[in-house]
Amino acid sequence: MNKGRFRVRAGVRDWLIAIGVAGALLVTGLSGHHPATGLGPLGYVLLAVGGLALAAGRRAPVAVLAVTGLCAVGYQAAGFDVAAVAFLFAVYAAMRVGHRIVTVAVSVAVLAALPLAALVSGLHDTGEAFAQARGALQIAWLIAAGAAGEALRQAEQRADEAERTREETARRRADEERLHIARELHDSLTHQISVIKVQSEAAVHVARKRGEEVPEALLAIREAGREASRELRATLEALRDDDTTPPHGLDHVTELVERAGKSGLEATLTIEGQRHDVPTAVGRTAYRVVQESLTNIARHANAGTASVHIDYRPDTLAIRIDDDGKATPGSAPEPGIGLLGMRERVTALGGRLRAEPRNEGGFTVQAELPVERAS
Image (tube, one colour):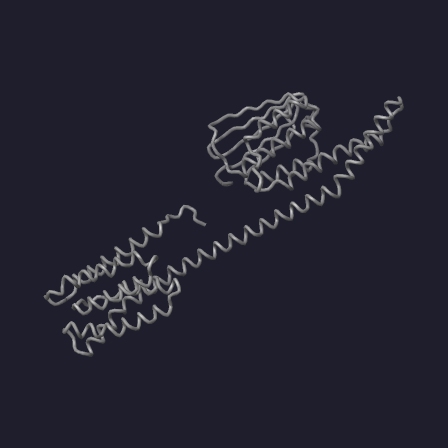
């Protein structure tokens, strides 16, 4: 939730508040009327100490509460008619950390001592002393309202943190469920498909060894077993691909191209532009696009060559995979699950995908992934 928001460390913020309050108290004391006695310098010292003591409010709230209360009573006795702003800050800090009884006791003591301090100053009679003591805390109520607003802001931050925690819990449960599904698929289907694949392969081998004609149905079963095994393996890999393992990204595209070359396909990789870091989701999607494209070329294109082109642009990652297979503009293949999966991945990041036969023959897959939007 902290997206570019300026933040200040807690200790620095405490000192800024303390200096600001001390400065405000001193300015108020200088601009007010007070007796020209030897108590004047002491009053200024108490004003400054009362404000600066707030810097330690996070570490020693009770001590700061006592110091600010004594300072407020002290400069009232010295004849300074200044609001007890620092004391109200200290009250808020002590209450916030749970020192309720001590805070209430000190507050009652200060409320009782303020009119006595005003009487001690000799500038007011009894009625005026109580009025001055009451006025010393009026402006502080405004400060208390501001402190309450700060408390509300922090409560909202805690609510946001709780929301993030709930999202992380939901994501973790989804990951666990996905892994559970992967285990179930592996346990229930992998063995059966492997049996079908092995038995069909053995039957074809025996028939050919005897010189017999292999039935088309048996060849279809063998091919279906191979395809089902590959698709199941890919599905299990996708289900197990979560954030707990290092994701495949652009750094692994070279391995895909090399692996495609070992399977008999002449594959090349070209990288252009100023290479820069891209979000993990973009890198993973780029890897999947290249992986699925090379897999389709090896399975269906009957191609001899394939080229992978990656272009790093300032705000976009462009990917293009071409082959010289049998596809022509008039014989566009029907989109399969792999192509639909690629399109869903790219679209989820706000990108675009184009997959179609080339005019000069073969097939092309082009994807543009926005870098900034995905980050």
